[in-house]
Amino acid sequence: MKICGITRIEDALAAARCGAHAIGLVFYRPSPRYVAPGRAGDIIRALPPFVTAVGLFVDAPAQEVREVLAQAPVSLLQFHGAEARAFCRRFGLPYMKAVRVRAGVDLLQYAHDYHDAKALLLDAFIDGAHGGTGETFDWNLIPGTLPLPIVLSGGLTADNVTEAIRAVHPWAVDVSSGVEAAKGIKDAAKIAAFMSGVRNADV
Image 1 (cartoon, rainbow, N blue to C red):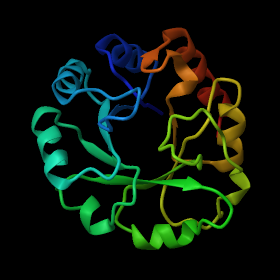
Image 2: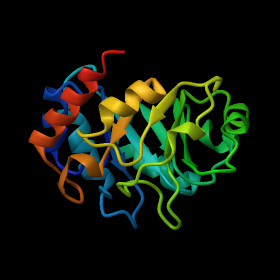
Image 3: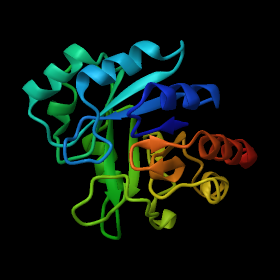
């Protein structure tokens, strides 16, 4: 389980205490969940062992990515824009490629094009948005033969995550707005309820 859009140390620690395997740090300035690289570095240093810090970028120039990584040493990159495979792999870190899913999007082609990604992160397609919308998508659009691990995102909450896991059987789930008190501010009780929903899937 990954809790994305972390902007405060206390939220990162709340996620870790509830059993999150990863936290997401958004380095996309237009996002209300944007976190400055220096602040992100403080959050990463506060994490306990075995919790992965993931850095989220949207069509950032390579130099900007490198400048962020110099201050915020994440372990995994997450690309939400139109980044080519060659760009995604040029930083010497494993990466996930996010895909905004809607009818007509060929996920098998994405899996082929980004075959060395650690996973495809599947999110809802909302025009003009790059995640964190709180909207789900039609899980039936996901082919059962997808050759890469799936990280399921998009509108997940404590109320629907059990159903989502049972329907999709993803490698992991990713939540942001579904566990917030306000944009960028997480709610520890909602995180705990979400984690309970994950465990209740029992798959």
